[in-house]
Length: 305
Image (cartoon, rainbow, N blue to C red; front, side, top):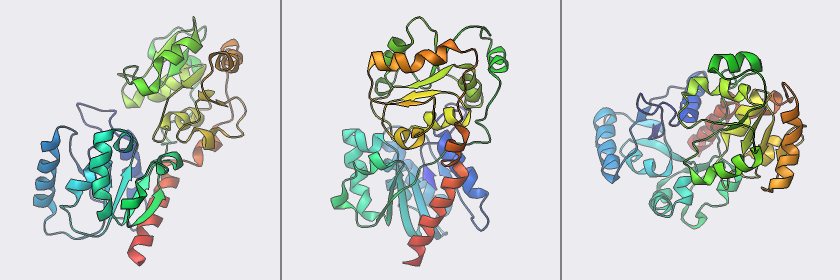
């Protein structure tokens, strides 16, 4: 597996979902997985990664070489493999320059995967010669679990009484729409995850009365599943995995952004001391372990052809 989306000491939150998939894959009997990571950067970083990959694995021949993120498909070509795969995550299709560079690599792939069905609809299918699949990374349900709200708030140094809502992203990312979250919350404090250590994220989710995901777009939208795994109410726009994950779960709301309707959906959760939903079973359908098995099945399909 080759990726520039992976946690490091400098960027501990980067690609934590890819790390979770790697760990899940390594728990599956019969899988031997080598991981090659490099830091995202300027175009020269990809050439350097290819050279380093060749030095490290030049004598190896893998069954599958799988890249995470479109641009990394290019340096991944430096490793020899019976089959080649890439998982596209969102900006590698939505950003014009990244899309062009990523698309140019797709004819060399035996499998082109996206992390959601909506993202799959953005694929430049005319250049794809291999198989197409939807292979999300999934939520680490062992880490994301219900924690008593008072306990979570005390651990974070928050006041125990009164409502909070959580905007589970960096406010500086415009597509996540922090402005919408502020508008819906009104006078209620809005917590954010911009500089939060990954190990603390479950505490922040459980500290909130509700999680707000008013994004314009999502490649997958893992925050929705993380909230469900913690049994915390979540409101989301119908992008990424949200429509499928929230369908039929009382206490959740999935609809295009409308300030009045979102405020009305949020109000009951703000009025309760510890509002909870029955969301964990829904999150388990998208667990990292469950979805890792889908990745292995896709690899097996490639190796049979």
